[in-house]
Image 1: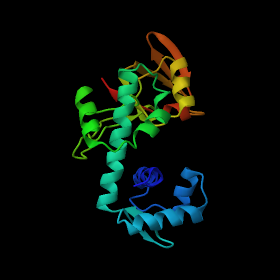
Image 2: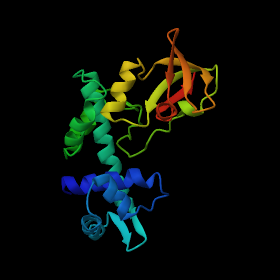
Image 3: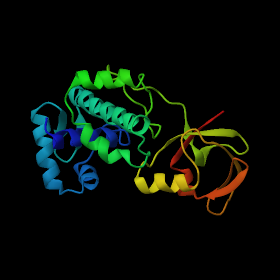
Length: 217
């Protein structure tokens, strides 16, 4: 597969998690910032390789072969992110674009050795699950901060938005994976939250709270 084909499979996979497996070409075009006609051309090529099923006006879905390929790409991406943060000391807002390049490395032996070298991590630096070499994705128990109860001890375990700008914002607020926090007040007007971190009170908007994953301690 070409790098472009792999990128399409990964995007279709992520979109399928939100749309019950069938994805529209317009949705793919929006993510790819591409013309719908270009997306249709690529989807047809992927269908010829038995990586997707495509029906005009109905949408696209991954075949078993396509899903396995997409999960393998995601596995490589997230392992490289762990390596970049843990071993090369990149910050969590710097690694996505670099991992986008590294995920296309074909060597299965290299990736398996990387996995072993990192002691078989189950989550990437953003809290997303890392598929194992058999394609099994660990199930995570977590909820959005926006939905968490008041006055419970919580810990940040992931982010829904992994864009550099959002991660940099969280750094300014001293929120990262493993940060202990507690919701002490919820504003009825705009659903903003007042939270307690290390005895310091800060206010986060509903948008921010809806992009942070936590679990109860």
